[in-house]
Amino acid sequence: MTAELWLKKYYPIDAKKAADRGLVAAVEHGQLKYSGCTKEALKEHGLVYAYDLCPVLRTIGDPYVTVMTFGRLTCALCILCSAIHRVDLDVKACPGCPLFEIGAGCLKQGSPYKRFLSRGDPTKILKAFEKALTWAREHYE
Image (tube, rainbow, N blue to C red; front, side, top):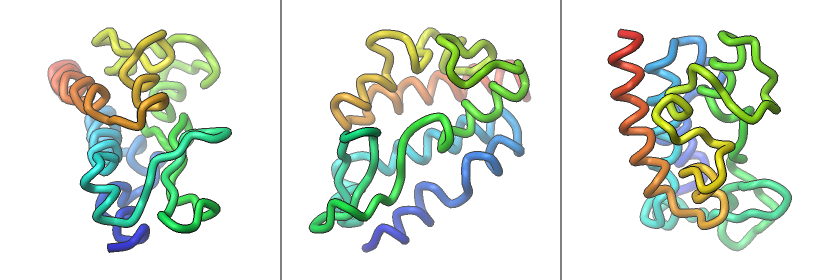
């Protein structure tokens, strides 16, 4: 398996396109992306999680090949919610974001996203995305 196959499986469309499809699609996009960050998925595709200047996935054996960065530009929820609520992406809260609405806002101290950034373990953020998906379906479908 390769980095290209990882992208096809876990990040098949960019965040802007997912955001254009609506809130539920944006949540699903994030959920799929982070499901590709389990140790098993990374190992299967020859990737590692690293945090230097920003959180990234890189190929094993060549630390200079970045496959994915994690942040507001690769997050369909950030793109969608900032557009809907006309909020600057640098604010400390993201009203309307399902993660924020369920109490797991990314910028909050100890949030599942911040735990992912510091540990590279997607377990908590995947659980948050499950709850966020339920919230989004209840409020927007």
